[in-house]
Structures are given as structure tokens and as C-alpha cells.
Length: 113
Image (cartoon, rainbow, N blue to C red; front, side, top):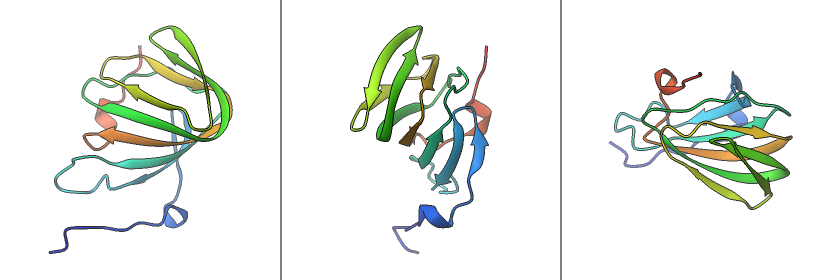
């Protein structure tokens, strides 16, 4: 059994998410250590949180604001954000980000108030 997996994000079909559109890789890994997502943020995403996931966002393109537990933080290309479980968050502004959920993304752990 191989100890690696390679994906091409261009071959992953985007799905809708609270932030806009995402392409998710490695969500099917049996160890569920982490996954990685290429996300196109719509101009005004939905506030949500996770009970178990920690997320790391890396802004690749664009600029805007991250709302984190009610605080507005300006972000731009090159900004990285660590979002711990329970932090209500959303991105405002058109951006492309990489999102690394740890452990791997679980749709059951996407919560809304």
C-alpha cells in the first residue's frame, strides 16, 4: 500500500460550501489526519464554526476581511489564519484560499447558529 496520494485540484469538481465553492482533497483518507481545500470565497460567506476541526486558511488571491468571533481582521494575499474549534468565522470579500482542516473535513462538524 502506498504511503502517499497525489491530486490535481483541476480534476476535482467544485461543490458549494458556506464560503462559496470548494474543491476538497484527501477527505477520503482512512487516517483522517487532515484534508486540503481550494476555496473560491464568494463576496459574503456565511458565518459558521466547527466543534472539532481546526482550520488554517492561506489567502492566495484577493483581499478582504476575516470575521473571527465578531472581530474584523483585514487579510490579503499571503495572509494565514489559524481558526480553532468553536470560533465563529466567515470571509468577506472575493478571495481564493487554501483551507487545511485538521483533522480531515467532516460535513457533520459544520455548525450554524
